[in-house]
Length: 566
View 1: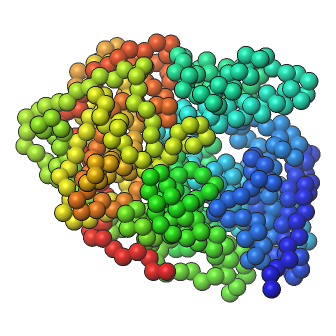
View 2 (view 1 turned 90 degrees about the vertical axis):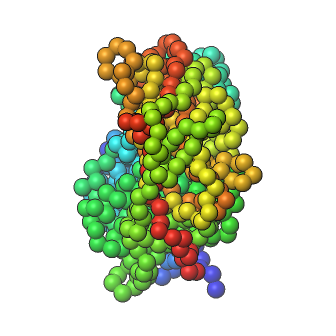
């Protein structure tokens, strides 16, 4: 017989400053007081439909669920400014403690949710609410980890698409309040959401969304007055964490680094767990990602994400002896593309991962990727990067609010461009499991005093498709006013992945200087990001041989392993 659920809508929750936020409360209709799971969202509590965990699934396992509109959003009172994180921690604290005091709650509270809903969990946990027992942030990051992942570049389409949606609501609120904005402003917001490539090509970038009174101007972000991502004092977080991410999530690196940081300060097994699946940044996590169908186990349902969440909460919110037993195998679960199975590890990267180097070298027309350092004289391959003709974004770790597609997509049409250099291995004779953190050290030259380099790792199939596995970017600037005398020693963070390269497939590194509109175009002139009002072409070069080594540094497993038993 099913469990009867009571749902109370728009329940008022008063914050310490008197502002009333409203929540929907889901709870079992009978039985003793239960532990509760809190979701806090700026996207509308009635629209919450996460593949990771839903309020209904919480109730089915004997939990109450509280789904709250954050300050100034939908049914909640107060003012909300995009990217203003200052109130989320205190509001989270107050809501946790309000939840714990309700007669239907036994005093034990956890938090869950994706993206923004994940960020507010970290901010609430830093405030140390006495009744918060655990958090489960899915696809989150922090400012320093995000900066490291991007190498100084800006997720242009991600930021402007998100701010564009916010601006549209700002326009609607102004109109409802009898203070309509100028029609030209409305037209620019609509253009940003429908044909973003037009405004995003503007110089300077700071002129985009530069509306007086709009609480999320790019000009303020570039000047450091507004932070696109929150920063955390992780030493203040004392509760267990269950982190979930995806290999093609924009926040994949941040999710992993937050888990690693918590494990470093609190290494007790079972306190901090990590799940990394094949997913892009989304509330819905199907088995098809990009051009790859990962099979039944690649979806949130196939991964049993809801059960994994609730098992974790059972262990940390239920009285001793009532929680789910800790499964053996390690605190990290990861999905291996190509094998399409889940694996377990004690830590990330897996302790058994070993380093492997592949060296970039020239060839007869095409660049080579070699498993041993070649004995070659110093040489270089060149291309011209023109910011007015950037390499289009296609796949990878992008946000799909605008018109971009995310995930493992074929790059071969981009690799046919003259401003993309490719370095490709011979066909593999055995499976190669690339599992862990991947980096690329490039000796990269430019005749511009400042520029950028973009690199991708791809899996070249026998039919010629070149599926994107990982990517990196790095802004470079020479000392002084002119070009650098020597090529830059560029260390690019390709990030983390778990990907099996099958026999007959080839590894490829492709190098260029743009990935637009996912990343901002470097104008090839020095200066603060977003403020250049002009651009110019630059002659770029990749060096190898002699004293110059350009090296792909992979982490691999010694031999293919069987997937997790189910």
